Length: 62
Image (tube, rainbow, N blue to C red; front, side, top):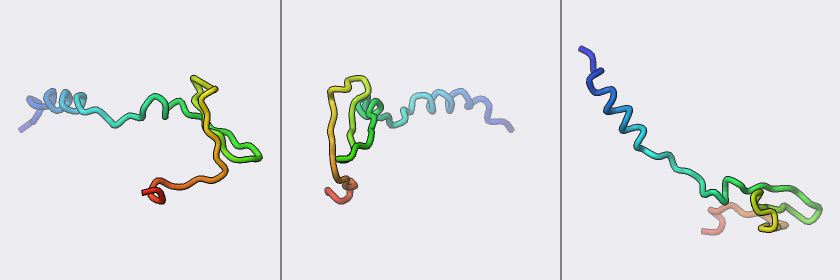
């Protein structure tokens, strides 16, 4: 016996589920290295930038 009668229901349920997305600011973040450290900047707004000479993981900060 086939379950094709419910195939459309499963497909539409899967379409309704949204995958976790990244915020737009994170998606447009770029980086480059300098002698002083790493620079993070927003590719859509290059004047918005951060520079660091050391990095930590989030688990170290919690």
